[in-house]
Amino acid sequence: MLSFHLMGLLYAILAGVAAGLISAAAASEVSVGWVAAAVVAVFVFVIANGLLRRRRITYTITSERLTIQTGLMGRELHQTRLERRSYASTAVAPRPAPSRSARALSVRSQVKSWSSRPKWP
Image 1 (cartoon, rainbow, N blue to C red):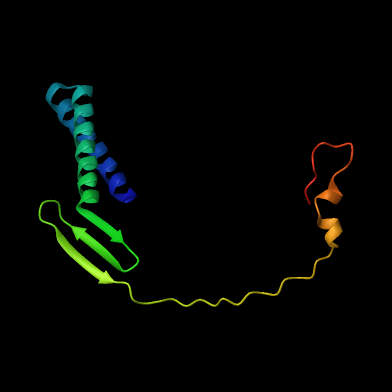
Image 2: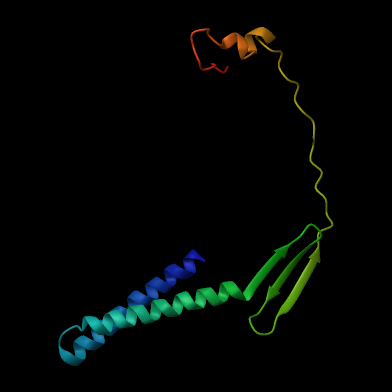
Protein backbone atom coordinates (compact mmCIF):
# COMPACT_ATOMS: atom_id res chain seq x y z
CA MET A 1 0.00 0.00 0.00
CA LEU A 2 2.96 2.29 0.59
CA SER A 3 4.06 1.94 -3.03
CA PHE A 4 0.53 2.99 -4.10
CA HIS A 5 0.77 6.21 -2.08
CA LEU A 6 4.32 6.91 -3.24
CA MET A 7 3.21 6.54 -6.85
CA GLY A 8 0.34 8.92 -6.07
CA LEU A 9 2.82 11.43 -4.68
CA LEU A 10 4.88 11.08 -7.87
CA TYR A 11 1.73 11.67 -9.98
CA ALA A 12 0.91 14.74 -7.88
CA ILE A 13 4.40 16.16 -8.45
CA LEU A 14 4.14 15.45 -12.18
CA ALA A 15 0.76 17.20 -12.26
CA GLY A 16 2.36 20.20 -10.53
CA VAL A 17 5.18 20.27 -13.08
CA ALA A 18 2.67 20.05 -15.94
CA ALA A 19 0.56 22.84 -14.43
CA GLY A 20 3.70 24.97 -14.03
CA LEU A 21 4.75 24.40 -17.64
CA ILE A 22 1.28 25.22 -18.95
CA SER A 23 0.99 28.36 -16.83
CA ALA A 24 4.50 29.46 -17.89
CA ALA A 25 3.63 28.99 -21.55
CA ALA A 26 0.34 30.88 -21.20
CA ALA A 27 1.46 33.84 -19.05
CA SER A 28 5.30 33.73 -19.36
CA GLU A 29 5.63 33.05 -15.63
CA VAL A 30 4.78 30.11 -13.36
CA SER A 31 1.55 30.57 -11.42
CA VAL A 32 2.11 29.04 -7.97
CA GLY A 33 -1.63 28.88 -7.33
CA TRP A 34 -2.27 26.60 -10.31
CA VAL A 35 0.70 24.39 -9.43
CA ALA A 36 -0.47 24.01 -5.82
CA ALA A 37 -4.06 23.35 -6.90
CA ALA A 38 -2.95 20.62 -9.32
CA VAL A 39 -0.73 18.93 -6.71
CA VAL A 40 -3.42 19.03 -4.01
CA ALA A 41 -6.17 17.82 -6.37
CA VAL A 42 -4.18 14.81 -7.57
CA PHE A 43 -2.98 13.92 -4.07
CA VAL A 44 -6.53 14.12 -2.64
CA PHE A 45 -7.72 11.87 -5.48
CA VAL A 46 -4.99 9.33 -4.67
CA ILE A 47 -5.78 9.34 -0.93
CA ALA A 48 -9.53 8.93 -1.60
CA ASN A 49 -8.84 6.10 -4.02
CA GLY A 50 -6.65 4.37 -1.42
CA LEU A 51 -9.35 4.68 1.24
CA LEU A 52 -11.97 3.20 -1.10
CA ARG A 53 -9.63 0.33 -1.97
CA ARG A 54 -9.09 -0.40 1.71
CA ARG A 55 -12.81 -0.31 2.55
CA ARG A 56 -13.66 -2.56 -0.39
CA ILE A 57 -12.16 -5.70 1.20
CA THR A 58 -13.03 -7.01 4.67
CA TYR A 59 -11.23 -9.99 6.21
CA THR A 60 -12.74 -11.88 9.14
CA ILE A 61 -10.81 -14.70 10.83
CA THR A 62 -12.43 -16.93 13.42
CA SER A 63 -11.33 -20.23 14.92
CA GLU A 64 -13.38 -22.11 12.31
CA ARG A 65 -13.22 -20.10 9.08
CA LEU A 66 -11.71 -17.28 7.05
CA THR A 67 -14.23 -14.92 5.44
CA ILE A 68 -13.37 -12.38 2.73
CA GLN A 69 -15.99 -9.83 1.65
CA THR A 70 -15.29 -7.70 -1.44
CA GLY A 71 -17.17 -4.78 -2.98
CA LEU A 72 -18.68 -1.54 -1.74
CA MET A 73 -22.28 -1.67 -2.92
CA GLY A 74 -22.76 -5.30 -3.92
CA ARG A 75 -20.89 -7.57 -1.55
CA GLU A 76 -19.30 -10.80 -2.74
CA LEU A 77 -18.54 -13.34 -0.01
CA HIS A 78 -15.74 -15.94 -0.05
CA GLN A 79 -15.31 -18.37 2.83
CA THR A 80 -12.95 -21.18 3.63
CA ARG A 81 -12.95 -23.55 6.56
CA LEU A 82 -9.83 -23.79 8.70
CA GLU A 83 -9.48 -27.54 9.13
CA ARG A 84 -5.77 -28.15 8.88
CA ARG A 85 -3.99 -28.49 12.21
CA SER A 86 -0.34 -27.82 12.79
CA TYR A 87 1.23 -30.13 15.34
CA ALA A 88 4.41 -28.73 16.81
CA SER A 89 6.87 -30.67 18.87
CA THR A 90 6.34 -30.07 22.57
CA ALA A 91 9.59 -31.62 23.74
CA VAL A 92 11.18 -29.55 26.49
CA ALA A 93 14.90 -29.35 27.04
CA PRO A 94 16.02 -30.57 30.48
CA ARG A 95 16.62 -27.83 33.02
CA PRO A 96 20.18 -27.35 34.17
CA ALA A 97 20.96 -28.17 37.78
CA PRO A 98 20.87 -25.13 40.05
CA SER A 99 24.33 -23.74 40.72
CA ARG A 100 23.32 -22.24 44.06
CA SER A 101 21.58 -23.62 47.05
CA ALA A 102 17.96 -22.75 47.82
CA ARG A 103 19.14 -20.59 50.72
CA ALA A 104 21.34 -18.50 48.41
CA LEU A 105 18.45 -17.96 45.97
CA SER A 106 15.91 -16.91 48.60
CA VAL A 107 15.06 -13.24 48.92
CA ARG A 108 15.34 -13.27 52.69
CA SER A 109 19.03 -14.25 52.57
CA GLN A 110 19.72 -11.28 50.28
CA VAL A 111 18.21 -8.66 52.59
CA LYS A 112 20.67 -6.74 54.76
CA SER A 113 19.47 -5.80 58.20
CA TRP A 114 20.30 -2.08 57.72
CA SER A 115 18.69 -1.89 54.25
CA SER A 116 14.96 -1.23 53.93
CA ARG A 117 14.91 -2.52 50.37
CA PRO A 118 15.36 -6.21 49.43
CA LYS A 119 17.98 -7.10 46.83
CA TRP A 120 16.58 -9.50 44.28
CA PRO A 121 18.80 -12.14 42.66
